Length: 247
Image 1 (cartoon, rainbow, N blue to C red):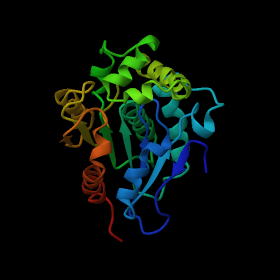
Image 2 (cartoon, rainbow, N blue to C red):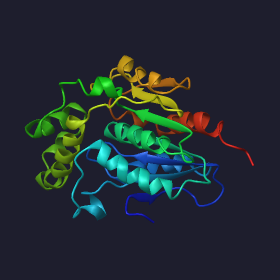
Image 3 (cartoon, rainbow, N blue to C red):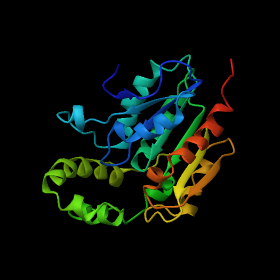
């Protein structure tokens, strides 16, 4: 398997595959709970960005486009016969979107659906002014609900801050390039009290596809997913499995 992917789903009995893109500072295993909730119908694979866990000695890439180029190249070799969708949370939503654009730019392989979570629409994101610089990352973590005990753990910060710095450079550098809307439909998910993503900004994703999409709002903040894994899994099933053949 490529160093870019980790598989968490079952090898048997699935109807579709879901490729998941982690948020800033996170690794592939942030999707373990979602994978368990989606089994066995959906086979979950998660992207492992360079610079973390077993790839910690690799250089982090600097832009969402660079990451998307690499992931799209890997997926083109894997997904020809398997119905699939992409799911990204926060930074991962932008990378998943750029990956979908690259897959759709070439014939033969494209996702059935794009699920974007906890992220403003691309044109809104590139104009935002609230993304912290490197000196503001700890306060950003506090704002998003990271516990004071975790923030006081210097060893944990020493491990996590280099990854967060690299990922926030990706977020700050993101610019949207004009192009055709996706042919894959979009489902956008967000917490109703997310300090980074207002519901109306999440809804602005929907015109980025020619297919009518929908928005699902959950109680909670930026990391609402941790408290609503089962409901998010049901949203994925409903929007993905209805598009896949039954046998």
